[in-house]
Image (tube, rainbow, N blue to C red; front, side):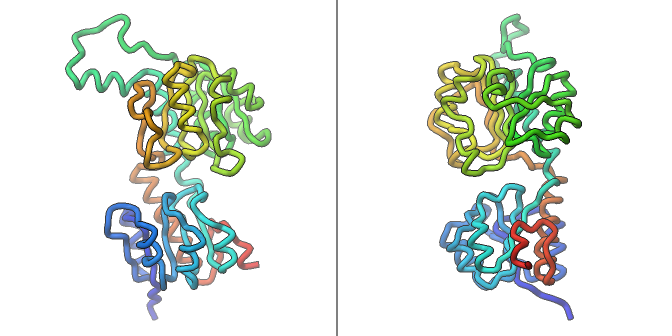
Length: 325
């Protein structure tokens, strides 16, 4: 007998994951081309066996209560600060994420932002398109050298390690900080563990690779920005609230630091007032994992997590396995 579980997907994803789920499930996808409103989400999840949700879906206690009886909410992301883990566990709803598959693509965008800010690529592109390029000039768009500089990595996990390896390709000195020293990080990158304060003072480029937790919220604020070099460049591809965005805008305006490259924002999709007007900030719309290959792998991983849960098995990337204990 063909199993036909009822699965809801909160946003359109690449086709291979949909095909996999449709082999075994009745699948409904959010048709609106935008995130669901709170009311739409509550209605959409009722009566479902499983939900595939996104990082910008607020899977709160109310949503989980509306979905009571569902086996799993499979998050299409590595981070899961959008999920109420305690509320899901209390209701016996499994949660999962998609670790590992977006490591390289996120490190790529982080290093791409680093290069774009340092070499003023976005500014120069806009200038050229506007017809202002009248010939080579010795003082045009002077930027920051990358090769041989010091790259500070905040968070020595998978993505931080990949970012450091990219830095090594540019003969950069690697320093890192985090909750503890990481022998794996040091072996893979030659990185040197330093305190947060040392990293902020010494690094020419600072790249953030930590999850959003109460401890990392506003990890970079006014105090930290003042510790950085005037020539420093800050890169954030982690989570927006890791940076106090208003303080960053002020630091960029006043020249407290030289530049910033952001893929994530504190009140996403809104930007802090004044940020969009700053030429020394390169801003992209949360595209760290946005390659066909990575997004397909994420979808397939989320689908596999769903099918495992529906078959009564522990999903490979379960966030609350204590439900089965």
